[in-house]
Image (cartoon, rainbow, N blue to C red; front, side):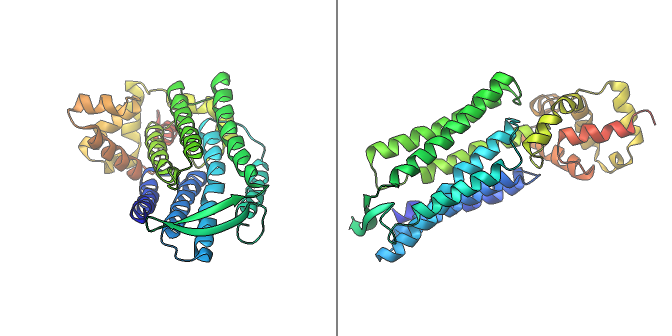
Length: 322
């Protein structure tokens, strides 16, 4: 058991590194989500190595530190991606609620409110906390259910309002959330000693990174901005990603001095980007792999000091008809 938890922890730490590579804007909610998964998996791993009740309880508290805040970070990320407008102080209110929930969940071994009684047993050589639940244990289930319901509600609301990035990405987000809900329900029904969420969280990270990679590559999101800003700039963003005409592209290529720092192949890719061609289409046209185009695109963004396609188009406008 400890081997599985150890691998999960190692992968969750690796995913933080992958996140830094993919998310060029370093969205604070996405980073916090990945850190909380790592903290949670560290707690599970530490618990699997515990030899005493006190050590097991502290490991359990560490796991709760990650799992209590994880749905909050996931909700904030979903609201940003869905362009959902929320009050300025809304995150602070939720952080307060999260902190209270953490204190309740971490009280096991100190107060009989979350666990009435708790002891340590060893099943097949693996340490397992034997718990008798207290009066406030049900609060945690209500807490998680409320967060999951909020995520589904945000996705559904923004889909109806058509403020989402696209219907496909909405379905993708819904699949991520509902998948975690299903695993949580199954885990509670079978009462397994193994925490399946430690694995499902990592799978969720991979799916979210995949979605972020696609959206950033086509300039559809700017993770550094909050949901309010993105909502207000939605119309402008749509305008930014409209393709330039051939005449406009020639003007941009001629007047933008930094373009001269690009290789010949990068200049070809830049032309396609300014035509707002998809990466797959560019790869097929140039008879190369999509991965190769992704590398060229990253080099273009770096050399032209832009972070994504939206910034590229916005900056390009400065070099029209000079």
